[in-house]
Image (cartoon, rainbow, N blue to C red; front, side, top):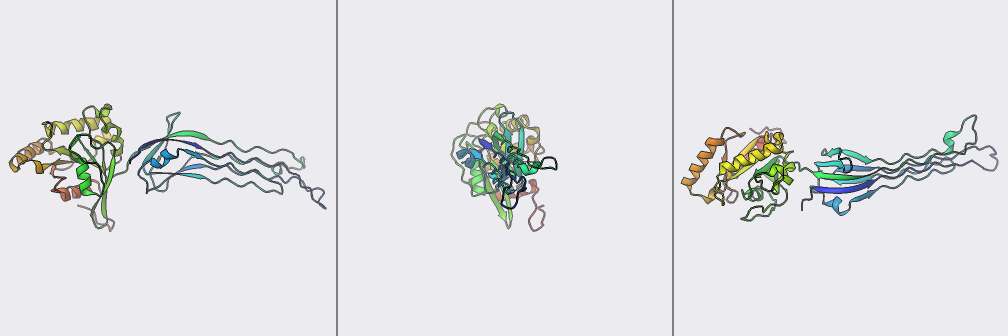
Length: 344
């Protein structure tokens, strides 16, 4: 299950108090102050876990508390620092302060380590205050206060290719055909109710991460339907595959569907609409050759020059044209073979 929103509460540890101690030992009549400093409180740190692709883990345990630093002791012994608490998040997680709405971090890179609640500094022991004019100080400072905050997390999937289209255009069928993903597939609209990820293997070490979101309808950018909730998941993609149903069950025109989706993408984000696009005319196995040819020619004539390449003809159900589609996706995503071979 993809959980792409979560709220968590974090609280760092308080710093340990400094110690007031005067050395009193036999044969050492003027030992002086020997109170140690307190230890530092534990931090709360966000890190990327590449093995995660959902926020499910933090929704089941949404509270994270670090320990306090230990107080200082006599004989100049400092208190122990508390251990940090690590919160593992999937790549692509946006972190917001829930109260202020400020974006605190974008946890995406594998080496990201974001401190969202810093532990209090340890207090000074009285040894810290000794001087020639104050040889027996009886003062120490308390440990620093902890930090606590409520964080709102939003996951934006990181994928090479994003699938867009009207409900029932065949996106889930396509994803299942080109990857090992198992999205729900049925012959009615809005089968997909959450974003799905799949990895398409192109041979050798070449692979593409593909994101499928629920179908878009008119007004999606303004909040209509289900797709608007997941459009953010394709904002990080390099290119889009726009699926068109060659013969929609409701009798609508594929060109009208294409223009409607393009309009919603542009209204949601001009940057998203500007991404390279591959138009794939799907479900060609459901229409006779003569009818197929006429529809494809009309679509190509209308939008052939508007995308990043000429519209392609495929069938997610039979597999026709899928290999060519994946190779086009590889080029559109500007991927480079691990061995150094540049596609194209």
